[in-house]
Image 1 (tube, rainbow, N blue to C red):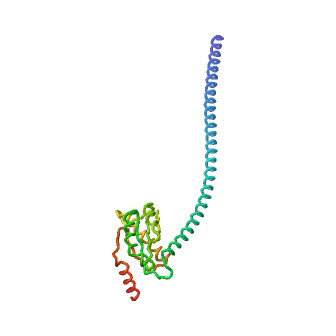
Image 2: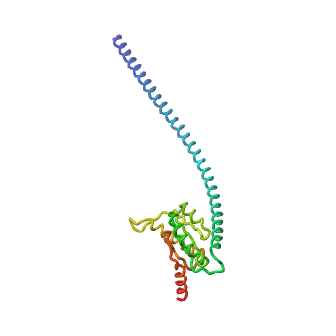
Amino acid sequence: MRKIGCDRRCLFLIAAAVAFFYIQMRLFATQSEYSDRLAAALESENRCTSQSRLLIDQISIHQTNIVSLEEQNRRQTEECRQLKALLDDLERKGVQKVVDKSQVPVAAVVIMACNRADYLERTIESILKYQSSVASKYPLFVSQDGSDPSVRSKAMSYDQLMYIQHLDSEPVQTQRPGEIIAYYKIARHYKWAMDQLFYKHNFSRVIILEDDMEIAPDFFDYFEAGAALLDKG
């Protein structure tokens, strides 16, 4: 009986030892897993902190850039204002050069141009051939749509005329699908040129020519007679 009781106690102790070791192993595994998770959490926190600092630095840099761009924009706006004032002054002087104050103009003559310098030259030469003797009655203008350098250079090479330029970067909104955008741009150019001549330079009449036209010898006589009839009406 004593032997059986001793065996039972031994088995109980062995079972208790096994259970203890099992619990210890599970506890160790749990602690290891917790330590790994804690390390991962700390690493993630450090990474987030680093990214936050980087983001703050980037925001600070962007804010500095924004301030710099705002200052640059302010300077450019002021420069544009000064340049516009200078151009307006030069344009007034240019108009004074082609308009005789002692002679009331019959009409301003404007050549609508874009990007055909060779055509423009032929048209100008055709007009000047008959306009020189009546230049004070028919001040000559070239209105260019766009910035083609050859057209601008050709127009500005003539002292007998005034060059004006229409620059339009606004997108075109057509009224119906499939419409040609170029027609809208041409219409904008015409309106701008008419506003310049009628409202800015106060001409009462404007004769419009395209840059591929040549005039007849009696061109100006015809329009002067027409103006007289309009005045009577």
